[in-house]
Image (cartoon, rainbow, N blue to C red; front, side, top):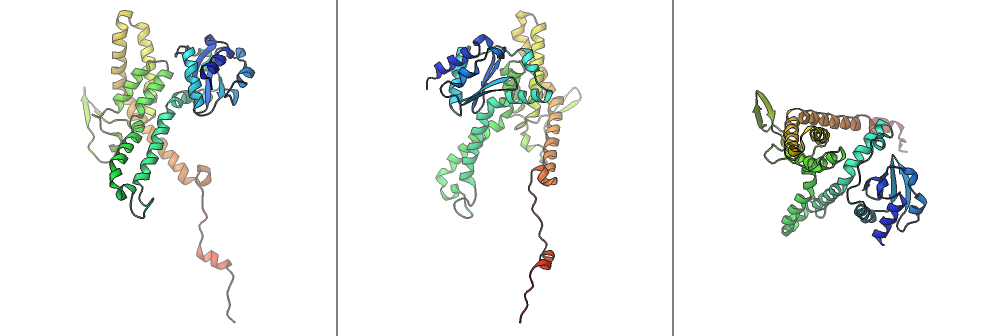
Length: 324
């Protein structure tokens, strides 16, 4: 399959590079946001080699290629557009209901990091093969049977946890980019939130002593945000807006120095002082709420309900056996 040729034909059929405002892909589809959708020649694209279907959805023209192929085509399209498509126009972002725009925002943030999450999840599955008790022999794990594989299992376990341990870094990069800020500053903010000098988030609430910073009479908990989503999402938005504002009011000869400094300094303080603890609590409440729905509402909450069989009632209707 000639990926450069397919990409060139796609760019031409959607009205050229100047008509593209955003280029990305998910697991199977190439997602294009165009400034003028009337210029899209969907019939021509549908006939291209490897294309399994085309459709418009929520302001995006989506081309179905399938897993693997879509990555290659997307890379070639990005080469033709310089790797940095122009930013979407405000009009395109304003289309649809509030809920649709919110879902699209989350999609744009999380779709690029799905491969990292998939890799981590599959590696966890491989690690479970090594460490699951009774999977091959009753009462024993595979590494107990073959100790020579213990170090291999340990390495795989480390690889599998990396994406989840440093999840705020991935989300910080992707979300800050989506909100119009410097994605590398977003990644730095995520790194701050999972810095090894902080108390690990998984140890928080277990009874272990919580370290604190004492600043100007305030006691701030020095706790990390490993595996969290809400704190870094909110702070990425705040970072992007602060950075954009600073670019507008800072003299050009100072901008490259002071804007990153002030952005990270302010956002770091705000994260640990207010937004982080509040969002951590909100995330915990959300998790408790979902757990309550699942365990309390039966099939409405998604949990199958099995009838409780009472022996006294069963015996009442069971056929009676009589001896002659």
